[in-house]
Image 1: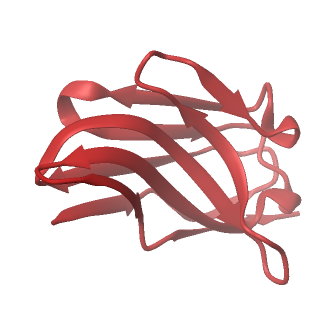
Image 2: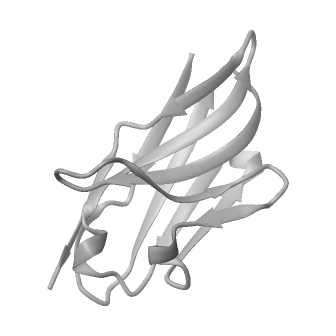
Length: 119
């Protein structure tokens, strides 16, 4: 059993910053990819950023230069630092992790944390 605990969402004014954190726990052997997705009302879920175990990153074009993803392998944690937030960044943000548990490979989703950016 593997759980993801997300924190850090909230309400912020445009131009402000928020920091999202996601910690994985449970029967984890190793973690491959860690990332963040978001889903705005009426929209499909989209990749915001992800980070491989080797350090390779991917960012959505809309967040490049504003958001930074990082991970702490010792703590099985991934952090999304969001700066210069815009109203269009408003969405539910989901942590997503690909990992090996004791018996199999898993893709695990967090419960989501709401980010609201006011204009």
